[in-house]
Amino acid sequence: MSVRKARQADVCGVLALEGAWETTPHWKRNQFESELGVTSSIFLVAERDGRLAGFAIARRYPPNLEVLDIAVAVPRQGVGRQLIEALKREAAGCSTLT
Image 1 (cartoon, rainbow, N blue to C red):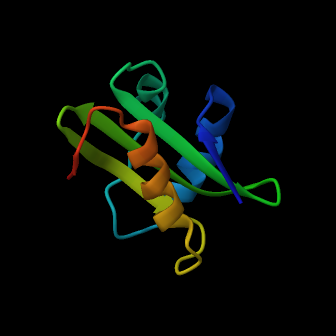
Image 2: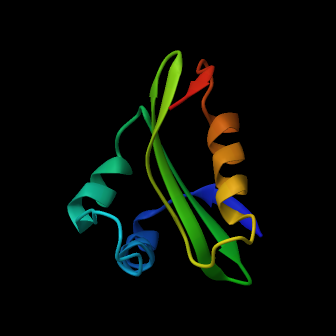
């Protein structure tokens, strides 16, 4: 599995993945797209075998890193944990995850 920064081309897959979770409020396409351009935002996707396995979005508010949205395709596979760890690595200057 690999984790990388999200790109515009990932938005359709992210929308589909989040939409599969009925118990969460859903973001709109323009909300995901706008996060790609926010400098304080960290928007990551996880891929496994060339397929979207999850995504996470957080914002830096030093010393805090606030997780705004996270979803995985298949629970209990370690994808969420890897996304959170990647967010922490990307969050220079942040010491608290909220």
